[in-house]
Amino acid sequence: QVQLVESGGGLVQPGGSLRLSCAASGRTFSSYAMGWFRQFPGKEREFVAAISRSGVTTYYADSVKGRFTISRDNAKNTVYLQMNSLKAEDTGAYYCAATTRTTVAGRHGYEYDYWGQGTQVTVSS
Image (cartoon, rainbow, N blue to C red):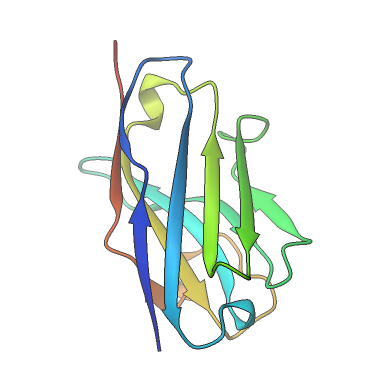
């Protein structure tokens, strides 16, 4: 089993940047495909980005493509989400997720087995 802890959230002005981190403990990190999801108040959790075990393959939601970058450092047991050109509509709780069931997981929450507690991102002037 793996434990996931997100950090790096906070308040940022529109157009600004944040980098979220998700630190994993437990089983070998490189055996996990990782993803980032977000949830807006009153809405269901939605996919943001995914990365394969090796870090070679990445996927993004259309709404963040070109602005967000997912990456991982298997030596540090950490996955990152670099968020640039932030918009007010990016405000929400951001969660990292992990699975060993596949080399790279996709856009659906049911594809992941482990979840962090989330970190809040607020984009506001």
